[in-house]
Length: 95
Image (cartoon, rainbow, N blue to C red):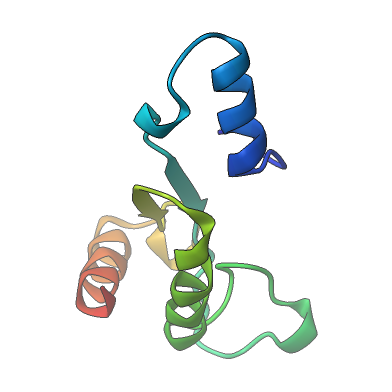
C-alpha cells in the first residue's frame, strides 16, 4: 500500500476498478529503528525502545491490516549478523 494512502482509499480504488474490495489483503511493512533508550519527542513511529515499538504494534491493530511485517534491518545494531539475529529474537519474543 503506498505511503499516505488509507485502507478506505485503497478499497474505493479497488471497487472502481471492478474488483471486490473485501478480497484485498492488506500487508504493512515497518522499518524498525530500535534504540536502547527512549528518544522522547525525537522518536518516531516504530523508532524507539522495544517496549515503545510494542505499543506501536498495538496502535496499528486498528489499521485493518491482514499482515504486519517488522523489519529491523535499518537499526544501527542490526548492521552485524549477531545484532540482526538478536533483534529478530527480541521481536519474536515481543509478538
